[in-house]
Image 1 (cartoon, rainbow, N blue to C red):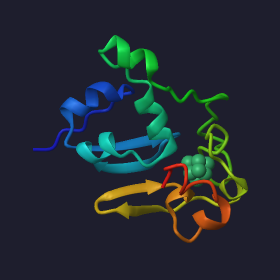
Image 2: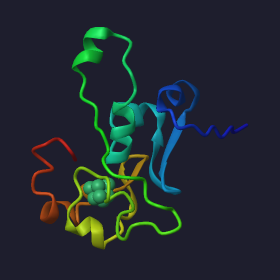
Image 3: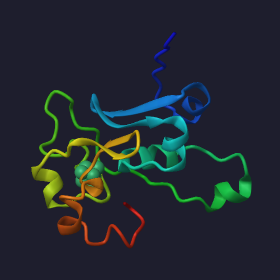
Image 4: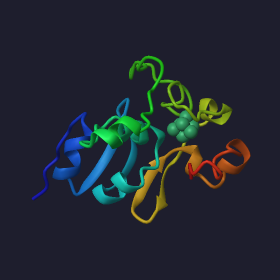
Length: 135
Ligand code: SF4
């Protein structure tokens, strides 16, 4: 039996789902096992969602860095060109406005739609990525 659980709060999904898909504006941007998603998120939107989960330890909670997304959520009826997340992504480059990233297998059974994880794109457009631990 398969159950599909839809939520906005990733803190509870971890305890319910074996496999997790993250959607933005109606598009799947990341898909993998629950263990892989929570230990090594790949897509910047997933990273922002996970950074918003409170940690039940006041010392850790006080020091953790949250990724706050700027800007308004675009209309899904008239989505942005290129990568649909580029208007809010902290890493967006020119290529993100022009070209839609392919939803591809980045690691074994771990899929994401982001130019940061596309070997054919990242080195030319994200020279900072490797040193910043983004890929
Ligand atoms: S393709 Fe570009 S804008 Fe889209 S999530 Fe990746 S880095 Fe951000």
